[in-house]
Picture 1 (spheres, rainbow, N blue to C red):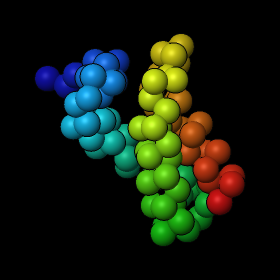
Picture 2: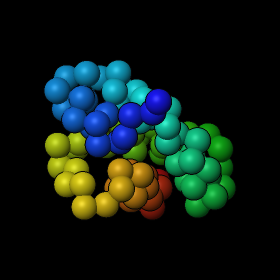
Picture 3: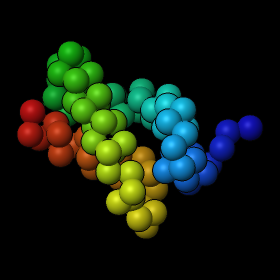
Length: 84
């Protein structure tokens, strides 16, 4: 059974990096497709998605949970795409 995002986030904040890996696996394709549609370039989209996940990992303590994790992650990725 899949763990809820909030459980994985809590585990990650406790030092279990593999929990973040599960979040990456869960959302990488969906995020890539969104960024690719925005940028129109596959390689750039892969780079932006990677940067977005790195930023999210570094900022995970600031995730307030007032939105879904993917919504927060999507906003990070979109900001990176705009800056790209």
